Amino acid sequence: MVSKDQINILLIEDEDFDVRRIENTIRPFASQIKIIDVVSDGISALDLLGIKKNSYDLVVMDFQIAGGLRGEQLIKKIKDSDPSLQIIVVTKMTINITNYEFAHNLMEAGAFWYCTKYPGDIEDYIYQPTDFVMAIFNAAEKRKLIKDKQKSNQKLDRKVGDILAGKKIIGISNEVKKLREQIEKFANSNTPILISGSSGTGKELVAYNLHYTGNRKFENFIPINCGSIPDQLIESELFGYEKGAFTGADKGKLGLFELANNGTIFLDEVSELPLSSQVKLLRVLQEGEVEKLGRTEKVKVNVRIISASNKSLETEVKEKRFREDLYYRLNVMPINVPNLSQRKEDIHFLVDYFMNEFAIDMGKEIPVITEDAMKKLVNYEWPGNIRELKNLVQRLLFFDEKVIDSVLIDNAIGKRVFEPEISLASDEGISFRNPEGIVILKTMEKTFREKYFRYVRKQSDSDAEAAKKLGLAPPNYSRMCKELGLK
Ligand SMILES: Nc1ncnc2c1ncn2[C@@H]1O[C@H](COP(=O)(O)OP(=O)(O)OP(=O)(O)O)[C@@H](O)[C@H]1O
Ligand SMILES: [Mg+2]
Image (cartoon, rainbow, N blue to C red; front, side, top):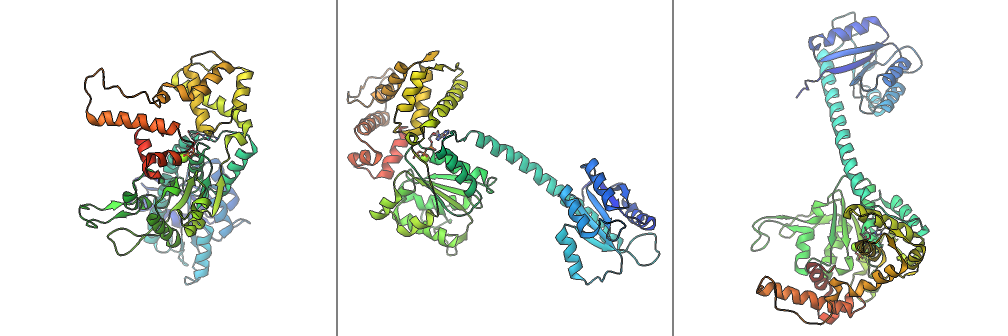
């Protein structure tokens, strides 16, 4: 389809006779194609392109013109000034039309098309006028496509900017500086990255930053919590299935790997992946192909894999819970996120940052934190790392005090165990009475589960220990915790 918009041309031609031939060639399309300006040398053309930015859609240029700047060199300079500008070159017939190298060099330099002039004195048109006009329309169409793409990329850029603004990595410590450097270095690479670090240190944050600052930022970022998908569903979630693959599969299902094609998959809590899925994942990494249930040929995917674990994968390998070959495949570029206690100089900045964020969110004034109080925060060990600090700051704002002193900090830190939500962890029993009357069994069961989970979690040092005490497989435990809103 030919666009209805007017096509504006800058013509670079130093012979009046040729200018007239070109004008005559496009005359039948005068309502759509306009020669806005004519210049006779390369330097003047570049000057004009600099002054009248965005005034032209394409440049039609003679190959042999007077002045030092011409040919491929001029084409490159024009493209540098605006890569979306399209260039059509007109040459003398003396150029051998089977000279592929000549054509190739022009295209390499950035020309869209080239055509030759009639050798004789025909003033009505240059050689093959229809080709010339078609080339103009096509070039304008290409310019429009590039412009549209630039516009939508700008929009996406703003969206990516918004996402990144909410995923800032705060801190000034050398550890955080190193993290930022690693993110910058790895963001554009396609090799798998394994992020390790204790719970709440910011592994997920690092994964987001890797994706949204890299060259896959406009593609999908698919985070998957490997611990929260039941074992029997994990393969169909990751790899999908075809219609009729099993009884009940009346529709096909796109796997998350296909959804993440050209983008990034974030395998969070990757240590929780069952061994059977580990084999399949290994195949995706080795061959870039997904094996879909019910399909004989494999599906090609191009996915960058970022994984994270707060368990030591090396230990998991030693204990035979994680495949060694998969471990090496995932751990091509390791990033370790250190505990907050190893970067205490960040605490001040993190507190300020979260205070500010929450205060705006909750419509509260930002309280003053006394020096003693800040000292307390810095000296505290932060076993739950930044997540714990973030929660504590939110709790401090709930106190509604203008000044936060060290006593309040003691309370807030101590309250970790006595807070209303945590006090449910006591074993004081369950009341059947409810202001709304008798509740259904399912609700009561949920209350019981929640209380019991909280109680057992309080009695355990780690999730693994709590899961064991409850007699649950860690992934199931993790999923149930999430369902109960405990994680
Ligand atoms: N340097 C930081 N600057 C600002 N916010 C941070 C920073 N590090 C972590 N956070 C915030 O702390 C919280 C916990 O971080 P995140 O979820 O990334 O941790 P994690 O290492 O993935 O934890 P887990 O192992 O428990 O999943 C998030 O709300 C995150 O935005
Ligand atoms: Mg996480």
